[in-house]
Every structure is written in structure tokens, then in C-alpha cells.
Length: 413
Image 1 (cartoon, rainbow, N blue to C red):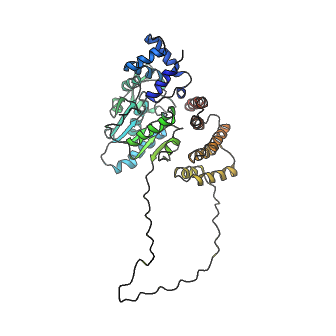
Image 2 (cartoon, helix red, strand yellow):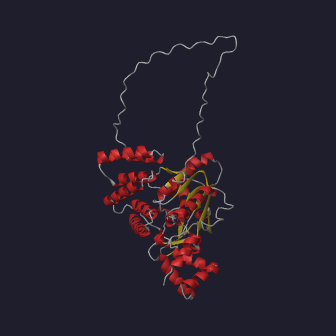
Image 3 (cartoon, rainbow, N blue to C red):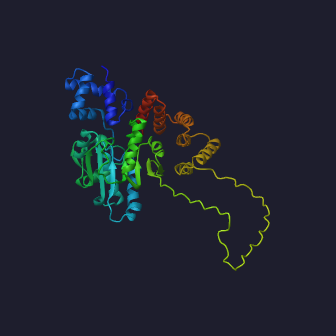
């Protein structure tokens, strides 16, 4: 049974590419819904989708399978909380810090943010989190606030004792205090009216959504996020997504282990001084102008060109790249490579710089060298997937995304 028409419908209405979601995910979901609804085949099911909002939602809920946990991407959450306490708060005394979490999945990210702000000392009554997801089932589970063991990963679970209460065997419920700043709602980022009536946000968390869109849809989604982000606001994305934002005027916020960006401020143009054929100042009538003294002869002095003797560090290379000095970052990185030899971190950084500079072939070569040294380098895998999709190789892009997801799962275990 061919379900290609259903896959096309899903991409048109949600932006989600069937290939990006994983092999056979949409096909299996469509076939299950065709059987459940008693439709004779894909054509009958398409007609049902066109006329039934309930069935459209049922298909979306079947396709969007949540895979998240508390304090996932903790460096970004902690950095955002510190930013609010140390920088944003003093500049906006008494104001409420507004955050958009999209897609919020089953709520772990939004509640983690509330916990991170509490631990940083930010008053929860001055925090507002709009948590949105396209899946009705996800929103229902998030609003319930009840979680099993799979939502708590890692060794440091002290927050569970502080902010949850037992609700059964291996089941916990989020405290009312942490629920207070979070408002859940069902929404689609690609809906034409998504941004209507929304005040701007001081931070937006949109992790691992853009990678499931084709390039035109990515650009459309980024423009919507740009319009919702307040001046100086922060945007958190997934590990493979920053390069997409660089092309839209964003620059990285340097936080180790996090993927945070900020809109680059437009630099004011320096006005060009007018050219004059005569002196700007002339002596008043009747006063003889004073002739300037003849310029002293300049004696040429031999000056040695400065020699860079100190070895550039990876952090310095990151800083050069983040400030747009791509050519210098590439030159210094290649020099470090020649001197110290290859490492996965250095090769990956050089690959990102090459990609940002539009040198896709060189970037792909460096990403693959990164994987030679570290076959589980999830960031390199995701960047290669984006390049493959950009070149029209959807099959290769899908395989790379699946490898990256497997690598990410192993990283957190």
C-alpha cells in the first residue's frame, strides 16, 4: 500500500519530512490510521483528512513520538538562567522574563527551565513560559505533569527530590510551584497566524525541530522565530542547527556544551567625510592666513613584522569564528593542525568554519575526517546530514540523521 500522498500531505501541513522522521515512520502511522478508521486505502484516507480535524490531529499524534528528559541540554538552561539573573534582570528591574518553548514535547524542557531559574535565584513570579507543541497528546501529558523513570536520566537527580513528589511506583509529579510559571498550548509554528497577538520573548527554545524541515520551510520557520525574539534575546537550538541561523544574522553565544545564539546587532554605517577641493577653514577677510610650517622629512625606519609565537587555542578559534572572522579562524586553525596534528574537535571546528564560509565541499571533507577519528561524533553526523539534504541526497541525509540519533542516545547513557 503506497502512502506517499499522505506523506506529502503531512509535509505540506506540518513541514515535517517523512524521510527526516525516520525510515517508515509516516508510512506505518498512515497504515495504522487507515485500518483504524476503516478507510479503503490512501485515497479514501486523504479525503477523510481533508474533512476531519480530529483525524488530522490523530495522524500527527501518531507521527510525533516524544523522546526527551529533564535537564536535557542542561548547559543551555543554566546559562539562560544566569543570563537572566546577572545581565537581563539588572537591565529590566521588576520585569517578567518571557520564554517560548517550542516544541515542548511532554513538558520536560519547560519544567526544567523553571527549575533552573529557581536554582539560579530568579523569582518564579517574574518568569513566564509559553510551552507549545503540535501534538495534542504531548500537551495533555505535559499539563498532567506526571513522569516515569525514563524522564529522569543521568546521575544527578537531586532536583527530583526538591521539585517532585512521588505519585506511584517509579512515578513522580511536578510540584505546583514549578507548574505556576508554565502555560501549555497546542500550536503549529508554521501556521500563518502563529505569531499573531504574541508579545516578544526574551528567549526561545526551539531544539531539534528545524532539522525535520526542508530548506524553504527552515527559512520560513526561522523568520517567524526572528519576529518573536526580543532585541538581544537568546535562541537555543539543537547541535546541528546553528549553521542554519548564521545565515539569518545570528551569532553564537559562547557557552561550552550549549547551542545558544543571539541576533547580531547591526553596526551603524560610518559616514564618509565630504571631500573638499579647498581648505575647510578660511581666514576672515583682512587677516592673512598663517602658512603651515613645512613638514619634517620622514626618515624611513625598518620595522619587523610581528611574529605570532603563541599557539592559538581552540577557544580562541571559536571566538574568531563567532565574531565572523572566518578567514583568520581558518588560517590559524590550519596552522594549529599542521603543528599539532589532527583531533576530532579541531577538525570539526574547521569544518564548521568552512561551512559558514560557503565552502561546502571542504566542510564535508573535514566532517568525514572528524568521524574517522570519532565515529560517534553526533554533531558532525548532523552537519553532514544537512549538507546531504542540501545536495538532494535525502537517502544519505536520513541515514546520517539516524546515526546521529543513535550516537546522542549513547552519549546520555
